[in-house]
Length: 155
Image 1 (cartoon, helix red, strand yellow):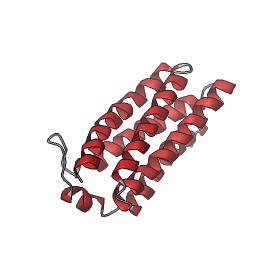
Image 2: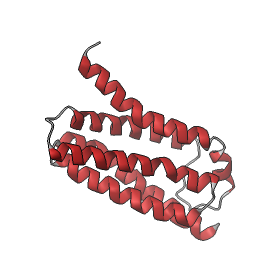
Image 3: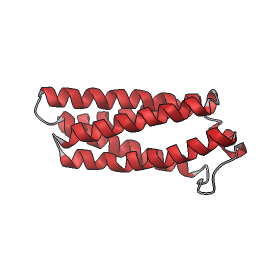
Image 4: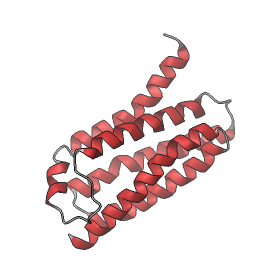
């Protein structure tokens, strides 16, 4: 297997693993979600794992593009922000579904959105394609923020 293929598979596997572990830890989350008072634009529970899988694939691909760029301080900073947002992403479902700390989860989601915005900016300075791959993720977080805000107010 070529080195670039291995690094791409690794880069994609990392966010999928992060999502997979948090998903495993919150495996009864759709039961919790079903019982919540939600805003009218809330999607069905089955949609979440599909969307997150697509977003994790895009995130991994974006990080791979940055990883394959020349080693510079900008690249190191971009990958550091990427890793930080991935760690923050891991904890949100734990706060929301396991802890049922909806207000904390909302604040955490705002932090995550800001980190993704910073990550997009850092990626853009290296690769526009990598930055654009993260835009759907940021948009999904805005939508998730809408859901989380109303859930935190109504539950």
